[in-house]
View 1: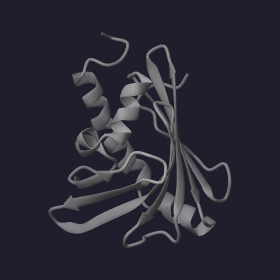
View 2 (view 1 turned 45 degrees about the vertical axis):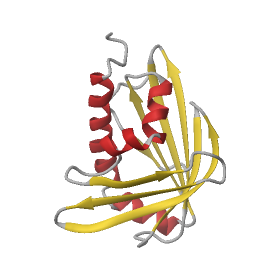
View 3 (view 1 turned 45 degrees about the horizontal axis):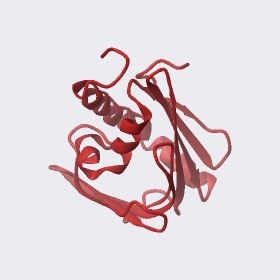
View 4 (view 1 turned 135 degrees about the vertical axis):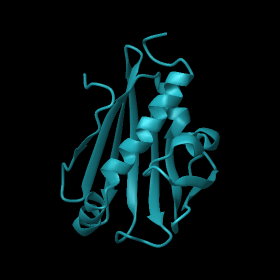
Amino acid sequence: MKNADTLQVTTPSDREIVVTRVFDAPRRLVFDAHTRCDLLKKWLFGPDGWELAVCEMDLQPGGRYRYVWRHPKKKEMATGGVIREIVPPERLVTTEQFEEPWYPGEALNTMVLVEQGGKTTYTLTMLFESREGRDVALKSGMEQGMEMGFARLDKIFAALGAGSEK
C-alpha cells in the first residue's frame, strides 16, 4: 500500500489524469470531506491563500454543484457541474467545467475510495474531452495545489482523531 502524504499522478491515456493518495482516515470521513460544504470550505484543492467562498451542492444524481475560490490579490475562480453518480461512501462521478475555462471542454471526474486497515486510498480519474485539455491541466500546477489542499485535509482528519493512531 502507498504511504500517506504521497500524491501520485499518472496519465494512463492521452485524455486522462489519475491522482492517487492515501489518507489516514476511514473512507466515510474522506467521502464526507469531498461532499459536505462545511468540510470542503476548510480544505478544498488549491494553493495556500485561496478561500472556497461559495460551495453549493445538490448531492444526488442529476444534482448540480458549484465552487467559487477567492484570493485577496487574484481573480476569482469558479467551477461547477453535474453529479452523474453517487455511491456513498465509495464513489462519486461528476462533470467539471470552469466558468472562465482555462482548459478546453469539460472533464468527467470519477472519485473512488477504498478503505483498508483504517486508511483510505483516494483515486480520482479525470477524463478530458481532448489531449490538449489534459495537457493544459497537467501544466497548471494542479498537482501542487491538490497536495496543499490534501495537507490541510490531513490536519482536519488528525484534529478529528481519525486514523490508525487513535
